[in-house]
Image 1 (cartoon, rainbow, N blue to C red):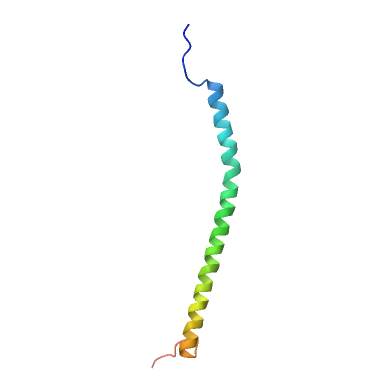
Image 2 (tube, rainbow, N blue to C red; image 1 turned 180 degrees about the vertical axis):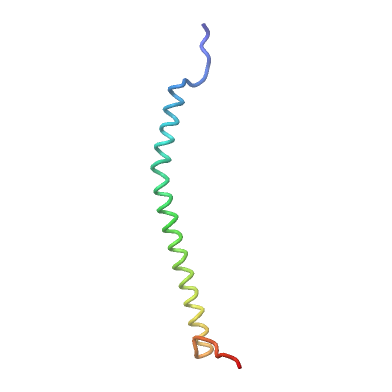
Length: 69
């Protein structure tokens, strides 16, 4: 009987198992990393808003525009 080239069922099952273990450990790290990135982005946006408010105050001597009318 001639041997065929290819993977056995056991080899494929071990590969799927290894990929499952790797993905199960990587997903929580990815989630934590994304939350940290969102927090950093929010802090940067808040600083930009604060800088804009300070620039408005320096040019108008008031934080809010005067009501017209």
